[in-house]
Length: 115
Image (cartoon, rainbow, N blue to C red; front, side, top):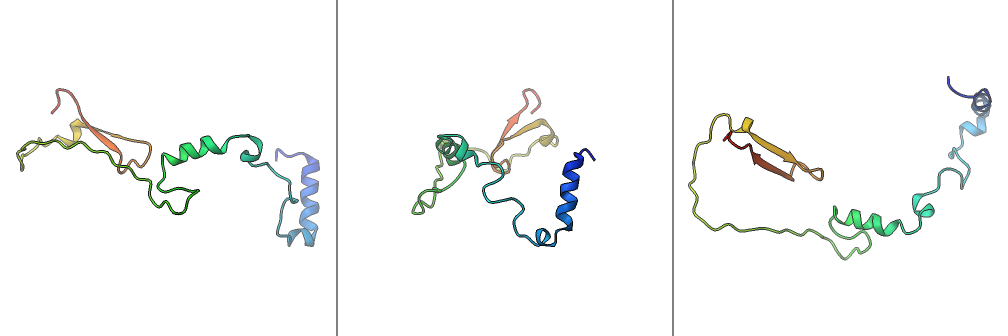
């Protein structure tokens, strides 16, 4: 099984103990792995900076409900509508999906010489 015989004996002992089987806690209070915030001083600031770039609102300030910023460039000009595209258009265009929210964050890049 890949376990030490002593560990298996302790497990069998715990299984035969009715009180232990009905206990709500598995570990003693205070045992187990310590939280990273307790072990690494100053971790909360860098963590919140990373999270802030990908969230709306503020986890620290309930009065701030949105953090969305939108930037746009307006292109002025007259463009022909209803123009037909080549049948193989979808096969010859590369769609690059971004890691964050790929269903909304993507770029369509035409392949040189194919469109």
